[in-house]
Amino acid sequence: MISPLVKRILQQPGFVVVVWLLLTIPFAIYIPLDADEAYYWLYCHFPAWGYFDHPPMIACQFISYG
Image 1 (cartoon, rainbow, N blue to C red):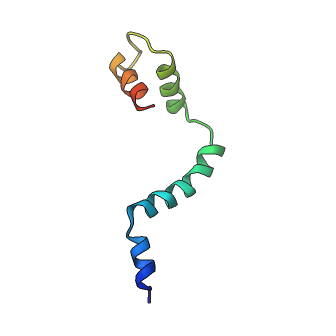
Image 2 (spheres, helix red, strand yellow):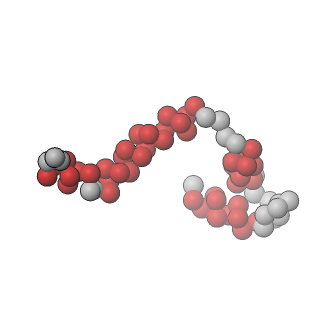
C-alpha cells in the first residue's frame, strides 16, 4: 500500500520533471551528438539566408529557443 504522502509527491508535475532530468542528464553528457543534431547546432550558430534543406526561418526559431 502506498502512503498518502508518497502518492501526493508522485502526483506533483515538478517531481516528474526532476526525475526525468536526473535520468537524462547523464546520457546527454556522455552521448555525442548525432549527425542531424550536429547539423542543426551548426546552422543555428552560423545563420544564413538559406540552407540545403531548410528555409532560414527554421534557424531563427532554433536561435530563439536558446
